[in-house]
Length: 165
Image 1 (cartoon, rainbow, N blue to C red):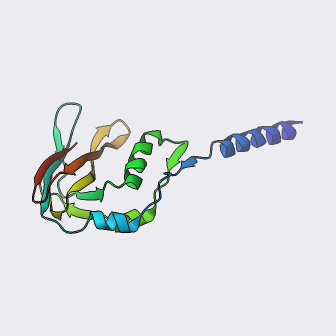
Image 2: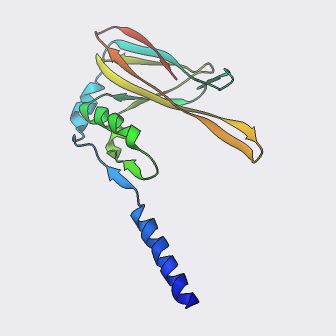
């Protein structure tokens, strides 16, 4: 009897676990590598900025030495960003891995400042991760997160300043 109860309990746990498998959402727009690459065609515009996060106590943590990623804000990528708030332990958002072949990156300086030259007019999404450790009773805990912004370049030769926080 005890073994039967244990087997039933195990079956219920397995069913609950299987039932909790993450649901995957995919953008309905198709990723278009040609349009994405065209959005990165050389131009004369510039995006400059600074990446930082503020702690609860108001200290500033700069994105010093961090990689800043720039993605063209195509319809596919805009839909992907719109889906992100639905991401949690039970829902994952699928992204076409080819998107990583159509991005630009730079490294922020010691103050978290960065620059992208040679851009065409259009919209871009910029992102970096800024994390730091805080001591807790259980050891060092990582905190911080993503610093991001959407930037619009309206005309050729324009310089746009942005803060990623």
